[in-house]
Length: 346
Length: 261
Image (cartoon, rainbow over the protein chains, first blue to last red):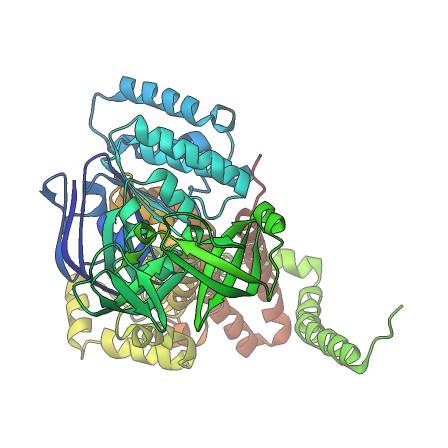
């Protein structure tokens, strides 16, 4: 559906280099990356809003690289919603109608009613954007974008400006809208839980380049570089030396699921896969080490517990209940365990 | 109550001084002529004609600034390119050049010795001593005020609104008409007022290019030179009153209104 080949964009401070992406029709694709990675610039390049230096973008088999934004059939929705402040909600939603083909008036009315109904914004139609709350603005912006039936809709951190309660609601709404349409969704986000609940595939961007693409599961479980591993919250990333199915992190010997193609590489493990126990468990888990708790960080529902094993510090996530049950405290000697299948090597 | 320090009192006295400095001569001038004199002046056809000419030429200059300045202000607000500061400086030039020099410069290209003047002459357009000449001068001095005000107005509108409009299928032109311009109209009005105000007050450049037909400032000057202060004051009062009421009306129009919620 969307094919991006060797895209290069220079825009002020931002440089996109050699972007290659392919997104299938009807997919919910998520683009993640740190602030300043160039995510919004890539979004605007797809929409035709920034000049392209080199490369090619095609949408639905049509080369759109040199097309104006209005010829592309790509909707864009910004973080700040960008509703037209001088138009009522109803006129905002219908803004794009007059540019659509002739003879669609009846179906347009039907679509309008349907969208207004689905998004629950019927009571807002005569009002102006400045009187609406964040969640309401968001729904209107979605309705406006969907009203012209784009083939692709680009969402720039649509949930980041919302309160937690609205965020959940809009997330479900996005999922529902995606399910009920054949539109391809392309969303930029910072939030992993959004990515995990909404997306089928994702790409990670850093410094103007795509560093990994794949299914959401792959990206979270098999990061291809230490940057991606750190970025997706694989808090335990260590350089390691490999010998067959064993590896050495400093002085610790670990059993790994498969041999590494090089003798030097990295081992990563998600903190939720590191289990803490007070005594050796009778289990098939081979990777079991004794260490000392050197730090406990409150993360809301969970504690992040730092355990030093010889000279290596492992991070483990423990629920608050479990931490109280085990009586975890700084300075305490514990055992940490993890399955070799939970290890990711690269 | 908190004791007010020397800083407060210095600021306060300076404020009073500035206001007195501006208002005293104006109030003095406005109250000097008697009602009978003011009525008498209004019967003078030359006075009516000159005030009307002042308004008409200033409005024409603002109209020209609107037509050619609007697209330029938009481009300057939205794009960044090498040499942009240079272009902005050129646009500001008429503000810093002494007024008679502006007149002399315009005569330099409008005269028969210059190819442009020659060309205009063949087309039957006269600059020297004509209404066209006055409008040319006023456009020259007023344009920067319009462009700068509108440029600031355009800059305050998020380009994202235009981006969304384009993505909904609107062309650049349509986006400008339906989104950018309606959101910038107050800046347009403010720019027009500034341009018009600057034009109506111009004297030095106009007197070089067109002493006749007489605009109000030239007439006031002439009466002052020929008959003295007393005879120039009533005309000045009328010009000030007409200008003030015009600008007040526009200003009220341009005030932000509360939208019904």
